[in-house]
Amino acid sequence: MTDFELLLSATPGFQRRIAELRDSVLREGPLDPRGRSLAVVAVALATQHPALNEVLAWAKQQGLVNEEIGHLAAIASALKATHFGAANGSGGGSAQPESATCC
Picture 1 (cartoon, rainbow, N blue to C red):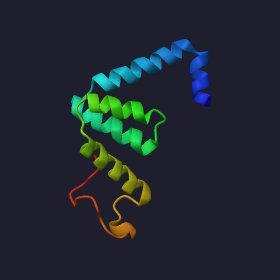
Picture 2: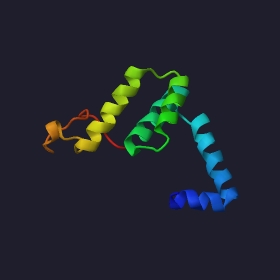
Picture 3: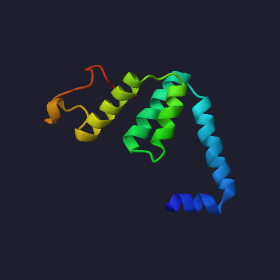
Picture 4: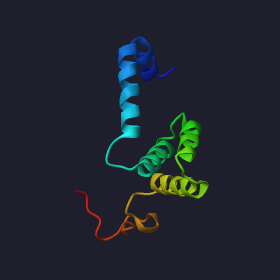
């Protein structure tokens, strides 16, 4: 059991609030259901979430197909293996569009 799981088991009120927050962000917000599904899968893949199989099953129920999930897995792997923005892993190029800005 992780420290976080131990904390959750010792504080049922906190556990309920965390579950409510999770359910809220999975149902509401500026992303449409498809966008939320893509985001959830991308984060689960990138973080190697322990419930990845359940996340993938949920995403498929939301309409994602294997090709999309595979592409997300490729993106997550590529970003983990290289510095974002590095062309061919050299660190000198720009893989993202030139017009990309943060905020």
